[in-house]
Image 1 (tube, one colour):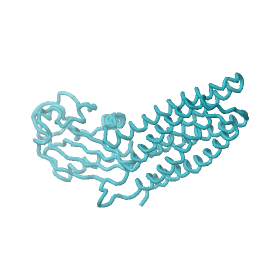
Image 2 (tube, rainbow, N blue to C red):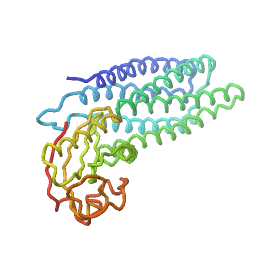
Image 3 (tube, helix red, strand yellow):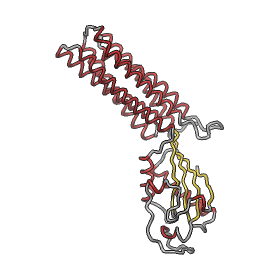
Image 4 (cartoon, helix red, strand yellow):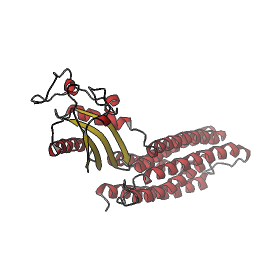
Length: 345
């Protein structure tokens, strides 16, 4: 069953498809009126908007499907494949734009009706920017890489369109027709750069590259409100599948806790994380028992009946130590300590 977030993402992407089709027609009309190769490049990029809009919509529908036997982690990575495809098409569009711009001086076309053409594509630029802003805002809120890619692409289209308008205005007042090709080449290069960034981001997601910004936010949250019974947290890993976060970690609790007491601390940890990360969250937590007297040096439990050494310092979690597979305050790897694995969904 689709969540409310999934439905919102699909509605926004449907809007992207509809608007992209409309703007593509307007840009073709502007090219027909002006014969400007710069406007043609803008129209060519809009074909990418249309194709990737439909691809993004399809990927969001796939990503919203519930997990099944063949996809135990869900279908969220379909968004990454869609964004990769979008990045590749953007690269191709940029190359075609540069090619057309280089060959245009050898087959010059007289420009005309520039005022009408400028007015049309100025309207498309404004529509693209507002739609891109809406996609990016929704994509950040709902953690949708497909919407983020669509939004960045639309805003890139906006800046390239504005550059083309500036070029057309220069032609309008100077009569220098070569500016048309020069502007198109410049923005063809910028489009290629933006496509490369999108591909780089999606490859990072497909390869499960660590999201350092997300990890730092998570560490800040945990340090600000840690329980005394969370003696240590280590081997932390976060993987994103679409809008779903999968979090693995090892939580050290007093060794004398029974299963129910340890599970209560896991529940408390999950609830604290959910307060600042309200998107779908799945946690796999392995609980370790502390190892006196080494663990005592960082243990803040005041009434501990098994303390063998005084507390020396309160442990501050950092990106380096929270992702390590060593218990802090000891030299032992977590595998050597007794523990029980718990799954909390």
